[in-house]
Image (tube, rainbow, N blue to C red; front, top):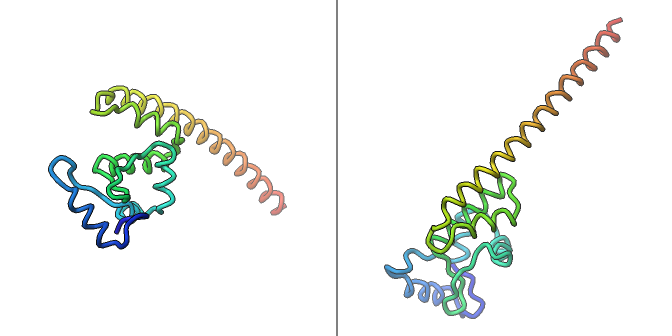
Length: 148
């Protein structure tokens, strides 16, 4: 089912969508299909559109998404899950270019970003390990004093 602000009913929106599927456009998806597939809300997809991360086509007022849009959404969600900011995600997606000519730049960005994140997480882990060691020492000291 599609979101269709100007459509009288879902059946007509589905018919419009089906009539625009051809060899050039490949598989097309409605906004509700993507929401179900990724377990997200309409508001989430619209938010990503507002931020310039997704740019669906409009066919008779209905949003339609290509396989590329679907792949971009998957990348957005995966990137958010590992802590990337929307600005970083947009930068990464924009590097790709219209025909993938920026793939090497994308990969270099990923290496740089993941190297930095790995360093940050390792530093946090070292801090956590030190805190745990201190807490264990305090705990054991307190237990010994209780035993008297």
